Length: 258
Image 1 (cartoon, helix red, strand yellow):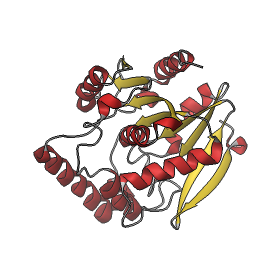
Image 2 (cartoon, helix red, strand yellow; image 1 turned 90 degrees about the vertical axis):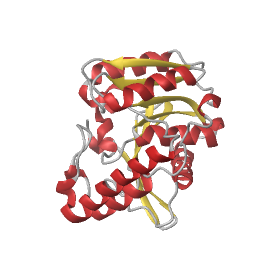
Image 3 (spheres, rainbow, N blue to C red; image 1 turned 135 degrees about the vertical axis):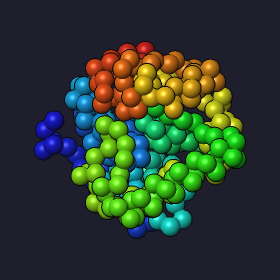
Image 4 (cartoon, helix red, strand yellow; image 1 turned 180 degrees about the vertical axis):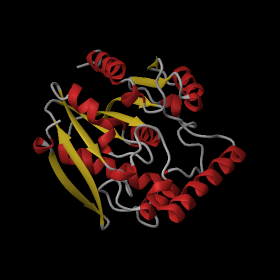
């Protein structure tokens, strides 16, 4: 990738800077990474898809080149940030692609602003936890992640192929981002998942055991969804098996209504 051709910008919202960049020309695609990753996890998709599409990438708050989330940041605020990023690039409905928490944020965006969404691609995404007991267990794990980053610095950052501590500026920013982005206090998308009626491609790695069940559930629940399991891929299937993921995405995009 020739980074010299990137379009770089800094969006200011409520005093916090969000890094975004755009590549290519054509119909817009907004890509949102997962926790611990950055917009660099989409480099293989930039190489493959920018011949026909405009890929818009951003770093979540506290990640990469983006500032830490504010003390009162909510998922609703992140949806507003996504809308601001889209507004800066296009007035047309866009395809949203998200991995992990980026997938859940894409679902939340679609629920809030369906008029701005052409389709969704969800990679290794869990749509939520309905049980309060399950959310309590999950949130204790999130607290452990946050504390590990506070005490151990960026060396304590764990994850798959999409996670590279060298891409981040501050372990403390990531520790705060974990609490904002990962903690679950409601059922996520579960209460309204069946009302999402845009075309949806669900991608999941065959080795991504925590998300295989979630992917199958979403494929049954979303009214206009298809699921593709990527063989021998883990959570970041787009990095482990970029050719298979890119082919599935390109096929999906090519079938969308004009």
